[in-house]
Amino acid sequence: MTIERTDARALRALIDAVGAAHWDARMAELGHGVARGQYSGRALAQRHAVELTLDRLRRGLNRAPGIAERLLLDLAAETAQVFNLITPDARDRLRAALRLALSGDNTLVPLFHLIRTAMLHQRRGFAVDFAGIEDGAPFDLLLRRDGAEAEVACDVASAEDGRDVHRGAWVRLMDRVDPDLQTWLAAHPGRYLLKMTLPQGLRSDEADHDRLAALHGRIRDLLVEQRRADHDEAAVLRLDPLLLAAAQASETGLMNSLRREFGHEAHLAVTAAGRGVFVMAARAGRENEVAVAMRRRMAAVAPTRLTGTRPGILALFIEDTDRAEWRHLRERLELEGETRQFLTGPAARCVVAVTCTSRLELFGTPAPDGAEGGELRFRNPSHPAARMPALAPAVLSSM
Image (tube, rainbow, N blue to C red):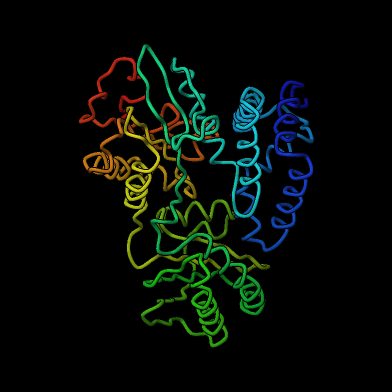
């Protein structure tokens, strides 16, 4: 079974809005990137899963679309419909936004977050205007219901902002180290675990290029010299036998066991060669502060994106997080605590509610991994409009 004709038309309409040549060039660029380093290629495919999935759907499937694919098709169709209904000037702005999303390190996630937020509020009975696209307003959406109005500012923030060891830097390190591990395992078959603590962190920016190269050199020297430990103020390395029973199982089973052993904050990688298995596990020198970083982001965004003339809703999409971390942020109430702290500050004076979502909700992941109802929502009880019945479906706290 291939995708329905209506879906195919919607995909074509979306690609026509971008420009077929621009879309094809972007897909070729992503394809080359995915084919590069083992770890960076996998990370690139995950980051650009939306675009790559839509392109695969465009070329047809031999099965019915899954839940995530179905949702992406709906978002693509809604985006194409918005493009066709808005004014010519607004159409130019949306086309520019689409092309920007399909360039550099950008993705379609911010735009699809905007479209999904609009769709959620339409289902809740609100009339929704795309004020940002149509009128150049600083906020994105204007909601209307039973005489009440509210502004919605959609924003995307990266969980990397709350980590000392970035996943992007970890991926680049593994691409550099993996050939050394393959060679070393061939000469030293067995099961090994290299644990690393990085008190100074490891970031994705160019400033940490030298630190990444130095860490690679230290790992290589540790292996060549067959030492068990190496430490200074920048890194603590320890090489031990891998004793987990799952080391004899599949890589998936091993990774699940490692995640249980080291927790959601650890960066993990497995290299296998012949009968040898080499696991690397790294942590920062202190706990991640993802929720704290999100509070700071809210405080920076709200005063600049919401006018204060109407109740404001800040719709925050948290990128670069996975199932384990997302559940931890919710179940430990870290995100709730930091959001409610933000709502007590002066930067939140015009904010009646904050919503938080991630890729898990975008792709339709059910609870408990995804948030119940498709988003977390926190009402600001001190805002004058917090108890307006007309706004209740958009502002009442979800937990």
